[in-house]
Length: 574
Image (cartoon, rainbow, N blue to C red; front, side, top):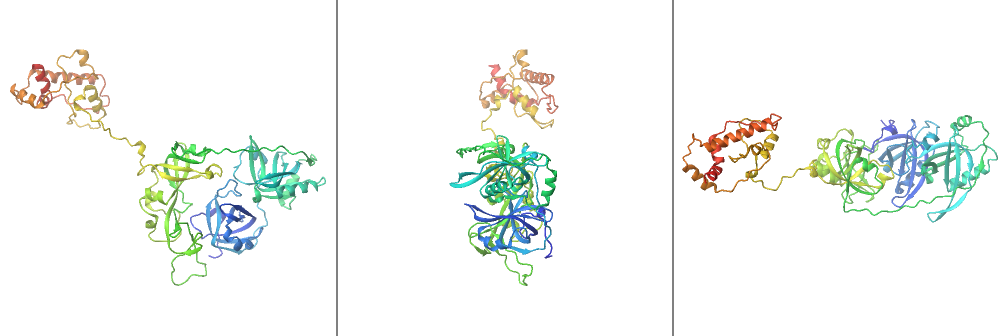
């Protein structure tokens, strides 16, 4: 088991107990205000797959002597994070991060290859390559400008512009800064008619007014002049035999880019689609309706946090030969507390794959957001376990049940999404409930409807839309028509009949005094029934009931009709 290792293309961030065999291609120091000075590395395995690795400032002294360029190493127990940044040295989806328990051991030499990945000039000029990725290029230096001394970041630095050509005689403008510029200028001056071949590793692509050029990316780049690479000999033979000599030219005037900061209006957030997110050029927040169609299992759906400082901790793995007979409580390393801790708690960190009708992306849901929609804490789902994920596809049912649900998220559009090509957006807030969009919920009308105001046209519309096809169903209100209506008024399906308000109790007493029995119906009632039957037949002839969903019984219950029109009969007798 100790001799086994994984290939770089197979590593995923759901665990830290990986073991890889790699060659150190490049290393450099990098300083930022957030992280301080770190040691950055480019590693490659025997298949030529490269990955960016980083050693934070607290661990640089521990590992710097063990990571010499061109040496093969075994690296075990490391963390993986999303590869972000405006200029990334490798195309790997993840970035390796050394942790407190990372081990580096020697390995036998597997290959002497430098693992060059050369990009064609034509593809660079056509915009086929990702501008966020650093690339390798090789070309013949055909002309070179003057070595300029400029002020950048309140410091004096040097700049050199020159032009390369490839074996197809395609040209590419290049700019080098600092010591790289001085090295190139001195080599060209000392060439004395000898062909100068330049290899720039981890160069960045720049674009101005549609014209693309190359430049070094600070110390992350490498510049080799006539290096002893096997690729150089083949490239030299493929160059055109035109005897093109190196020429010196004047410098091209520089252009100064001015950026304008815009205030972010935090009072109102715009509704956007996923396609709009991809085209966003401003940092801020946006409301997005999207449906979860999957869970990204490349990432663990939880992490462990220190209860003392509430920061993420790293699992301290026991060595292969340090297994004890007595089971110990798992320990974690906290960078904030700077100590091994055991009092930790599991929290959500879920990457959800979402989509709408314009595109697809990923949403990052942290503990508070995920707990709200799942309805259960991550610690309770784990049942007290502190182990790492072994099978990333083994998800709890409550998390799987999120697939297919639609949410209205308030998403954060950060600078990493705009400039660094990061394809996941952090969820700031959930603006809906239980997967149902609150904005689309139809609220019931608060206005009370007077049943007496429902007339023939309104009632026919209500009956047509009804889903009840029972023959015994009775309409919620009866229509009352005046006996002296004209033919045009009888055939109208929208004309309303105004009914004068009456005392129903008084009318009922007068109705009984007129000698109405259960089996006897006055002529007025029969006339009203006849008029109503004619009205129903008229509506049928006009195609009001086109779906067959409405079933009207033409035989009227005389008792119900008498009760419904009692008020009207009393009014006409008077």
